[in-house]
Length: 411
Image 1 (cartoon, one colour):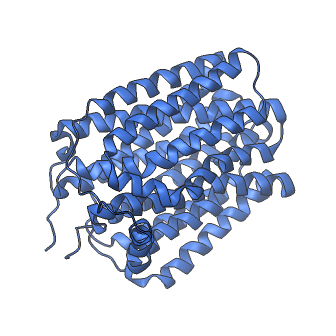
Image 2 (tube, rainbow, N blue to C red):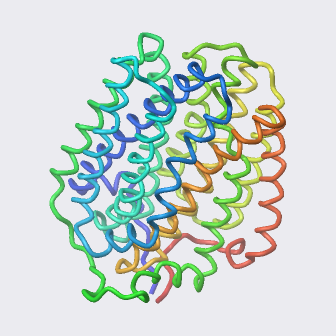
Image 3 (cartoon, helix red, strand yellow):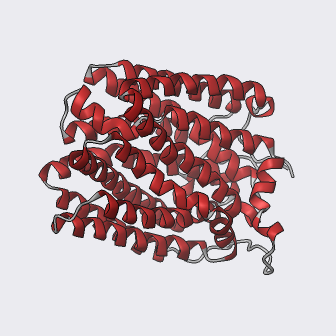
């Protein structure tokens, strides 16, 4: 039987554990955005090599891929709240290491990539745990509201984090890493304050069938498969974040603060849509809305790649963020409602690899293409590819396209 959705616009915040979870995700996402801006600008400043910008994403993605059979099982078998808290501590240690390299003037690509690998391992374990923990903190009828606010939290951090990160980096790299470290420590404290929630654990005996349950569920549930793979290929081709230091410095002739504005552009568009969705959730034609969002993301990517005017570039990035938010909202709600709790960690592990592939591996794709063809062709080709993905997936996954409501399916 379908569960009716709550009409309370602040339903998720009626639960104290969720409020702490929300704040922890916001502060940690804020810190990650600051680190991302600082590392990207510092790396390009030191090397002037677009390939290194792509490698930043690759080294963060590989641990998620290599550990995919482990991370989801861990999230389903053990205390998700504790996993998230420990991961935030490890993330703080990585930030502290970057801070130490900067203070001692030892910032070199090899050392930075080594730290990013550890950071990637931390994210590989935290991703499935944090995605699976959220649904344990609110009742099912409040889950779409929680998903919308979760997205708002991340997107707000995506707006403020890059701008603040650019401003802090303009003062000094030490300032940027120090603030990020403080926020990660604060996030860890908030997660430790969340009472251990109820959780349906996987069976005690570990088997290959248990480990591969996430893959099995996704392969059999075409709606979830279509939603995850659509995001994978759309952002893999259309991602342009890794190349923003090049656009900020060489094409648009902006400094670190300008890079912050570019990085904030997608977040500005996304937060507007996320807040709108929190108050006006999608109730009809959800699948179609997802495909339209992906198509608009491709159009925004094309405009950004071709623009040589800062305000047009920022507007294009805002369009990309707004349209991507629609896709993210539908995808995350579908995954949360269509996935049984006992396999949620393993399904989210697969999802996080797909998300990681679309983001970090997409950055590697962009950096590699930019080193061969140039930054502008790399972005333009990606935008055209994203439009193609939207069309092909709409034809290949008709059930996803025809989904009307985001209410939980009948089981």
